[in-house]
Image (tube, rainbow, N blue to C red):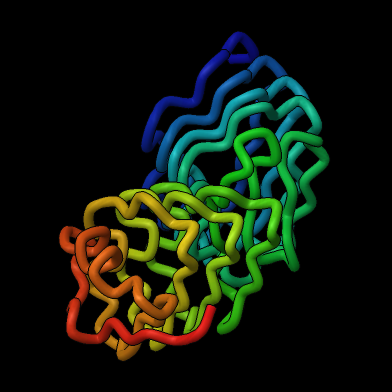
Length: 220
């Protein structure tokens, strides 16, 4: 049993009765959706052998309270910790930065990769140049967000199902917005863009899944 190298995708997904689990020190990779919705499992230790954590690996795990990401981890997938609303996360890996125990930034890519869904107003640091695909997916506590002028791209499904998001401010630096980036954001009432940039953002947002009539101009 200690020879296990990989925990496969969705290995423990929806294991609602699982209460205890020990990851052996032989494991190097935790797959996508591995612990998705493990409601009864309240604690877990990630051994220093782990180097990779997959997409949504810990997503929607509301019962998890504390977790340490060891310095050995060099890869964290999209939305890996989305909807872990009560989690106190401790990231030891220098490749990633945790901002206000709320968003995770890949410091090499300068990209937001995950949101824990525990803040109504999030400040994205000016070091970020990209909002990754699915980074804020299902972050329904988020109500307002200002995208800093350092950001040039917003990935596919970046804010999908952010159902409480009411206002978004986009800077002129943005040149790419992915499909369904704002899909199913039912409360979104205003998307503010710089003066004279409405035409540009109507084009960028045409496949983003939002109502283009809510685009409004303001001074940048």
